[in-house]
Amino acid sequence: MNGISVAGFLAVKEVWRNRGRFLLFGLVIALITVLVLFIAALAEGLANANREYLSKLDAQLVVLGDKSDNLIAASRLGRSRMAAVSRVEGVAAAGAIGFANAVVAEPLPNDASAPPLRISLVGVEPGKPGEPRALAGRQLSTSQATEAILDRGVLLRLNLSVGDTLVLQSTQGTRDEFFSVRVVGVTDAQQYLFQPTVFVPMFTWDRIRPKGEGEFANSELTVNAVAVKVQNPAEAEAMKARLVGEVGNIEVLTIREAYENLPGYSAQQSTLNTQSFFTLLIGVLVIGGFFQIQVLQKVPQIGVLKAIGASNLMVGAAAILQIVLVTAFGVSLGGGLTLLLTLGLPATIPFAFTGSAVVLAIAALLIIGPLGGSVSIRYSVRIEPLKALGLAS
Image 1 (tube, rainbow, N blue to C red):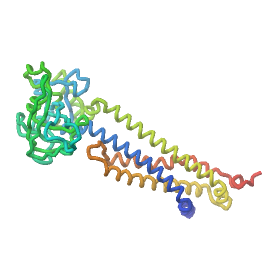
Image 2: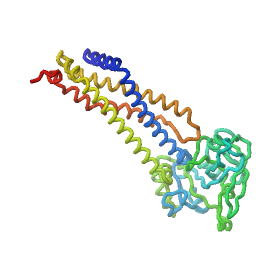
Image 3: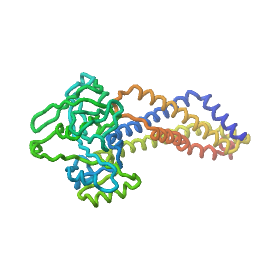
């Protein structure tokens, strides 16, 4: 224990005597920390902007039409197939979901220079899986009501509140038409495909959604997916096979499979994770290089310590404690800088911190310090006192 306390004293003493040098290197580690945390938050924010609505579905399974290749946008389900899904034993509730795009014509965005707001228009069945929970106002009343629940992202961009009227613009054949809906509720962040979301009853969605000339003659309601809530969530995998067997001509996905098959989702996450990996790798090399230079500059001092009886354990412990101290300072400073940076970013930027992602990133950053400095530690404990002092023959 005495050796460890001496090692700690030596580590702190050297850092203090060379505080300018170690401060600069701490700033380098802080910048690496900012970069790692920024990429981690950006990855989580972009993922949320893509999957937010699907990941928060009050359901365990998503049913798509056959030959959709697990893509929601390519799926089409008619009324008969929707009804068949709800009749399967073990299904607690099933709700149809339709996805489309529209433009908010009124009110205009808060930023006068911004273009009209494009939104994801989602049709849901009131009271069934797929309808988000309203945190303010109330839920949708009937499937034909001209009502809407707004995602929080819409409120960030428009000056709206419960009771106001929202005017949506969509293309009907060759004409742009306008539809008014009354805002009855507000939900939390529920983005879909990077766009803020407006939820409307299913038949209202069918009237508003963009249509080609050939679709006006089709009177049957067609949706993209059916959200299925099973009676026993532990049997979700077994329910997938039962639904396919009893209904037929469908594809059944878990919630995770549904959003992981969204266009570009996996490629986007792989790219950002690769960037994080290489940033950590650069951190290892930078920290390793710095402490290796430090050891090379103090070879005579280490030789003197060993000559007067310092053990390899004490020399190695002093090096490790010094690396941990400097790394912890840099990571703490970088975390604070990242927090200040996020406070100044607009709320519309897809930038999100989650507890697990932050803990994982900080843990990785704290580990790369000793990992990067391991070469210098190994070198310092192998220094021969006589050679270090130039007395070896």
